[in-house]
Image (cartoon, rainbow, N blue to C red):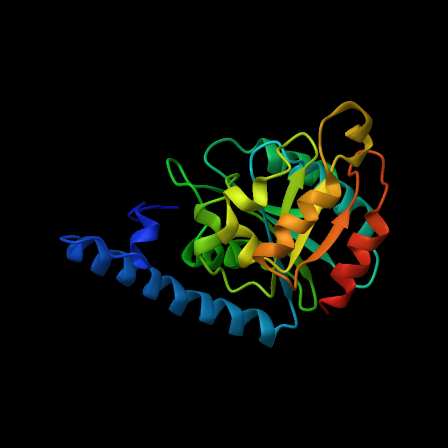
Length: 234
């Protein structure tokens, strides 16, 4: 699927002198994306499908969390399906398929995020059952994915304790648009320099309404809270 958009995202909000053409193109790209996202949202709502957009930097543990989620929730209230976003390879999709989940892979090439058009195509291919839970694994970075509405119901950002405590301050827009922050890999806390309470304070200084969960997708600690949060999206 194609990917093309200007990467001076911040110029939408902070117009530099002489940057009129860039701003106009950026607004046009985002405006078209919003129209397609609205169509996705209507399509999903008509079928009672709940879509959750998962965003993180590379290595935070999104795919491991998805594998556990697919295994644990399959056969429960809603069918679970996954849209995998990566620049290249189908490795993550193969992991989800082995876990028992319906999945479609979207490779963005040089692109740094999924957009509404890509998700529209993925939903057509995936054809999830009515009433499904669709988990979207966005391309791993904490900048571009936050700017593109996919038509999802909720957004979750995942960070891990092997990253810096100050991630919410360095990438505030990502945390500002999220509904949930998951702090993953808490089983590694005894071995790393990570201040969970301070990270939560930083995140809520950006977005006071954020819900925060701590868990380990590897050991299973805290996963029930994640599943309860997903159930509450229904």
